[in-house]
Image 1 (cartoon, rainbow, N blue to C red):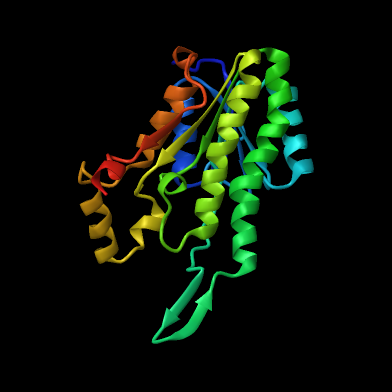
Image 2 (cartoon, helix red, strand yellow):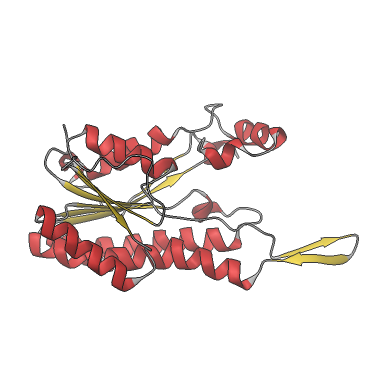
Length: 251
């Protein structure tokens, strides 16, 4: 029960890594508010330790209202997990036999930046004043190893995840004086519903690049979130924790 009685907000907590993170935080004793546009499969109405709020993380008014509701219900926000994100992969300019076949759509670039980067900014901007008043907080954002090293066909996603790293380092400097740590987790290839639908050859390539020779599990990322959120991590701030099975070493 490393997070007993602490209040955590987890964005994108309805599915995938977010859903697993919600479960792990509850196992550790935290009260959890899920911010997501999709409803989770289970949100028991009689569970006083769990709150679902339908929130578009890129909407400042919705986020501010949701943060105020959490404080009204539980009195504080100790932990913010910026996990919400989307993918809209495409090459910047794809050619075949000398002809331009496709380009990344501006709309797809904007959508990914809106959720994956602007959303992190909007949520942290809403929660930071609450943590400053408390003189305590943990802010942890989901980046990605591709935000450090780039990846084919992911201009928008890489730009957003690299931006998250930059913001993390700025906020660690700005908020540290208020006893608030700010860190990011950079997952490698994680076995989610999205990965499961990839072609076999792509999965084999992922495994070949990962020294541990397995895909990550959502629990691997959730455990990293718990580690950085717990009181014992009080002197870790401005860090980018790669949870990738040694992927970078293996490339």
